[in-house]
Amino acid sequence: ESQSIYDVSDEFFALFLDPTMGYTCAYFERDDMTLEEAQIAKIDLSLSKLRLEPGMTLLDIGCGWGATLRRAVEKYDVNVVGLTLSENQAEHVQKTFDAMDTTRTRRVLLEGWEKFDEPVDRIVSIGAFEHFGRIRFTRFIYTEIFPGGQLPAQEDIFHCAQEAAFTVEKVQLLREHYARTLNMWAANLAANREKAIAIQSEEVYDRYMHYLTGCEKFTL
Image 1 (cartoon, rainbow, N blue to C red):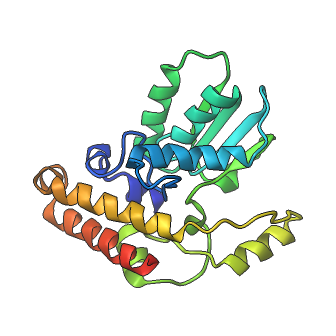
Image 2 (image 1 turned 45 degrees about the vertical axis):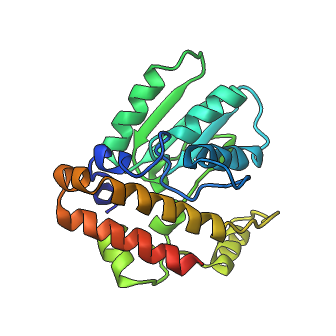
């Protein structure tokens, strides 16, 4: 199901995402940040919580187009493994990995988290929980934008973490940041309407505009 989400062409997503191809909530540390700067800030915020050390192996569940993994290699000198269900994403990530000048290992695997059983030192997963939960949300999001997706409630995350012997150390709410991210995505896509329709279709363009503008209002 996630294959169908992200295998709308990369060219379509590039019309409204930033150059890092970040498709999750950005983090606007400053009001004057560009979308790209805020996406990098989000990655840095996430990685800073992991206490990474050189030579460790980092697993990214739902690695998208690989920006978090590349940042981890460049900034923390770690080995990385990315998991994605999208063939387009896997191909893109592998190409960018191959172009990196580093001795650290970089792998991207076309498989789900439940099939991965190798030991790693740290795990990061940004915006992937909705693809392996079982909580009902809105029919539109689940059938049109994220087929099979679920949005886990905070208490469910706490419960599952504790059941697996993890401890939740800190909760950081980024709701306003997500609303701003969605607003910027919608503006970018609207500005590229004709290109988007030519690349995909008017139906796909309308569907994504509905998602971006509707969810932006929901997060406020």
